[in-house]
Image (cartoon, rainbow, N blue to C red; front, side):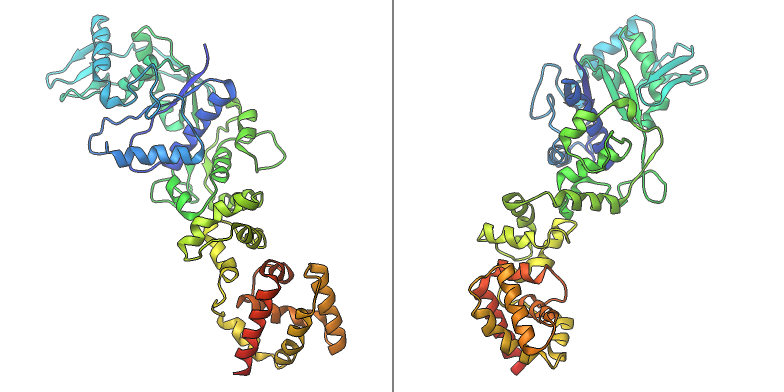
Length: 438
């Protein structure tokens, strides 16, 4: 039988990083084995069961590239895929337990499952064999007095009905797994293989909550992260592939994934490392892919991209300096406008050097006469002019940077000149000549 795994979140309004990591490990197992990844929504809490809350889960999974084979928006042979629509199925399984004498009803109407009261071994793919005495635990409520079913019962029923072969979930579920195995046995069903993955802790060492930085997948989207980089980082929260590097692609993760290699110890979330990984993935982007990544944030900051080839060349000059897409505007805005503002520090340094007016007066016509507008041609012009004026060639670099960008930092000056082109460079130098003469 082919492997079948699932991700079964409750709609809370956002996709938590812990849930996303659970979905990711299940998805990796399914894709590695050629099996199926099922999405099931545990939406029995009516207060939270809203379309926006469900959509946040779908959007987060899609953004990460975690496509599901069965579930909402896809359908399948073992639906419905919403617990709120499966009550007749739960009623039928409760009837099986009643027929087997494994449940009883209390005076208030609650239905309890009678534990078998024998030690239960949980064979775990991650934690190893875990033994539970299972002798002193009170019998488990599986249906409330109001008729609503409890998580433990519906979880087991759904996994039976949907033919799950493996259940990979958070370590916090391990203490209750013996209860689930007891239910499987009472229903005469074979339990799936369980694997309980370590928790994700915040930098302070506590279990990561929705208030912690980086807790929701949506926050990475809004901060300008690449989906592939976040995918990469989530993999490292509890698993280390057999590679000599920490940066890898989704396909490499699929090829290398092995449940038995998931760590036993809890993972510590580190936004600095996640950001560093994004920077590494960003450096692989070129051309149209680089523009597509940066463009939404450039336009959000009022920078209109009308020439994508020009934009690609401009972005290429700074991509080594940028960590996430939201930073691009601060580095490249001057490429896209002629009326860019000057930083106070840049203007102070521009006006504070007594040599600048004379250097600029000599530099502009020399560049205008440069026929070979290449790095080599520009370098030759500056070196020749420096020798004539008896100054170091480096004296022109700050002047050019301030004049062309209005900033004290930025891309390589000659790279900037090549992207801007001769006409723009000469126009900006003329503008600065006017500022210095005023």
